Image 1 (cartoon, chains in turn cyan, orange):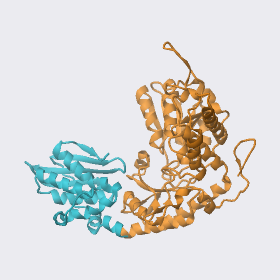
Image 2 (cartoon, each protein chain N blue to C red):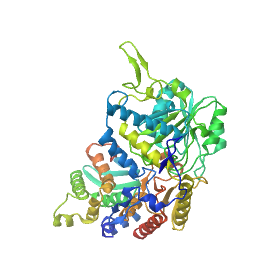
Image 3 (tube, helix red, strand yellow):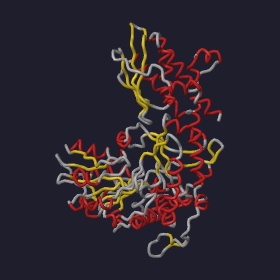
Image 4 (cartoon, rainbow over the protein chains, first blue to last red):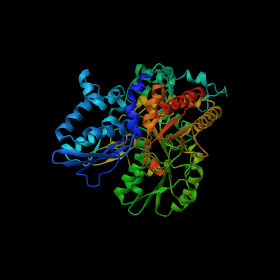
Length: 150
Length: 420
């Protein structure tokens, strides 16, 4: 089914099976829990900062393929980015999974994140894709300790 | 269908059960999802509604709508009569002793909250204990937790084994002079376990401890006789038994209800009001403040009538044969673990699949028109007990077929393919 393939793209299946940066950072500067009370997805995200720059990102926890792959891809994208850049990526990703991202060139610019474009066809799964991103945003903007998607 | 003169319930003349014929009573079952026939296996979340229920709701609003217990005009008398007729019907359906034992509430959740905040408020004190089981729905945990927190009482939990069966030896030990109430699922929503409630009630009564049964998952599958069970309270939700949402029943023994303080204050629950004092109405009205869910109640009546018209022995045989068939088929899939393997079960199949999160199973099954529930099923302690974050749950009703089970299993095979 084409719809299923658009949701479960190879990149997503790969990152679900072999999540990158799936570990803890004991001396993290920011540690934040992301929790989806509806389905029980639960991740802890660790950020190591050098001034304004994210020098390491890791995550741990459990959840569905979409939430886990999203956290994994996010961790590879955000490493080395400044806070401002990270928040800009959050905005782009947010638009993408809500089906509000337009322009073919821009989609290409998204790189691996573009794999999550299919999520917008599955409204019930948008929260799964955005969970880890919300957690990072919360950690960077308001220094929260936990966020939920509800 | 003819009506039995003594009981007012439909007289069952045809003892056989034709599932294809029954399905025609449920218009929604003809829905196409993603171009495929709907396979509705989320009955433990809510059940579908037969034509008589849908028609009754429409007829009520077209020809009978008025407030009850208030007017002297034609419509109000008619609505009141229909509304109170459902109370009689419900009393007969559950085999209660009297209509005074039937309180209409929003659903099983409100029924339990009502008992917690009335019976609980006067009978539970500091140092007392409320006993629940390890397989309760949140609705039969949180109200008691709130009460215990307020009173300085303790919530105690009857443990279960790996099959999802309560440990009766442990239960006996937990029944003490401190226990004020046992609040127990008749049937588990997450596991399908049918608890041995009759024996458990007898054990509690031996020490004078009353028992509340959460019957939300039992009434759709079993015939419930509150007098035979000798339970003190019984809670059920109409929407789980093929009726409308937003309405349900609290059965309570007359003596207990009579001694309980009111639940909410307002119209209908009073005999007289002045600024100095209020005289409360008698049960069940004492617990029904405000304009009730009249259409919902009348719709629920249609559902109970429909259920009473079914040949129950054949229905239960169909359901248990369906469960056996589905359990066997699911067992042949590699990597599947069924959670909840009690000997006595209703048609609930909770399961996990190696390497695939239940949420992903749910999304893929939906592409094949198969509706299941995924998540913690409002029973997080059950998930913790089995060391899993969530399960996928297929739950059956009497209108489900073996062909639907085949579609379900085929879609699960597709899940395995996608996730390699």
